[in-house]
Length: 394
Image (cartoon, rainbow, N blue to C red; front, side):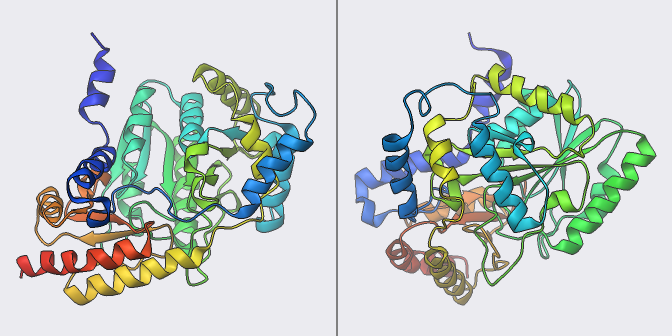
């Protein structure tokens, strides 16, 4: 008999993954070209050619034992130094290798930092809509996720409710910008106000509150929008980053944490994160891909492909009568469902072989998420189905 905790996790297993499996089932029936799977944020854009070249070069050039061996739990020191220098150059920070921990993607990094911080009963606040796995990550370490209700006018965080949600049990805040599922970027004004609230609450409650920024989509932004770098606004900020989206490497599971010297209890937190990396079974981030990405920090995917998808899908859906805030980043549209029950609406879409994810999975009922990181032709073929779906609700 499995554990009670796992029983709950299994019962609440990701609807996104379930929808992905449903897509494969429908493809076997109707043909993959006739199924329009917008369920999973799985990049369709190829990784930059530099990644392939770097992998080959690392295997050919590195000395024996340097590629495939164990290393410090934080990762290869020279890789971490390269990443710190890259961040400093781009954001005017002053990090070094001791501020970087290489992780098994952003998810691995979040689990490492949450295990390092949380005691049973500690609260972690996040803003709806939010990536649904946050609840599982926090619950896995016996914490409680506190969700601030969504501001559906523009999907900037509801800061009034946020301030009222902070209590003596609050240990951390998780934010995600560019946001999954909305594609909204939290503005500099929002970040400044959020930091002011946290500074005030830390003083009022006489305790440390950590701000964890989950940033797998940082580079995927449009129209010259800038994503504020959180450590410049709040002392107790920790960054979790992934190359999964920025370099189209989701299956290679590589990312990093930034833990600045300025954060409260820095030395113990850094040591705890290294121990957590071992305890969680990672031991260290994959060695080969660490060395490869360190050679490709300036590389970028072709963002124009995602932008072309964004413009086609957004403008087409608006013309059919759908409502949506135009995404500033990532590769998702968060569309208002055409009926109150978003799950029923997602089921109705399946009748047209369109797979979308109910917004209730992200703590925001009444909406659906559409991942447009697919081939342009998939969007083109899906549009008649979206139009028919809309006409059914008129």
